[in-house]
Length: 104
Image: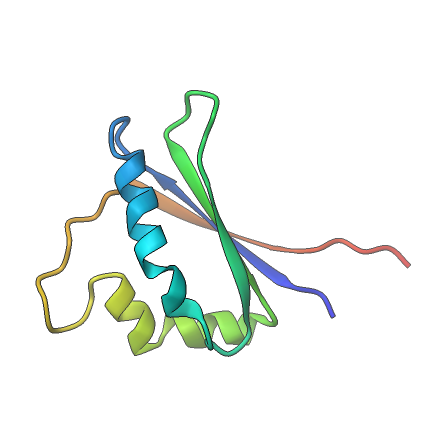
């Protein structure tokens, strides 16, 4: 079975990368048990860029979309009730979609 890979390229101000990393670390456990979720990595730039990459793997496009439309997604992105939403760290983001290329 091939994975669906989603890459969120998040551009942050030069001095805000650590804050982005801390927020992702704090939410790491929140994805456990999400149907179709295989895992994620947060990639920190090492070449002077200010775009961090969030790489997630999913069983299917449907699993990703179900999560993206869920209350869990809204809560983790500051779109739900309760405590005041945190100010976004990123200045912009772009979502890329991939699958793993296989031959044969």
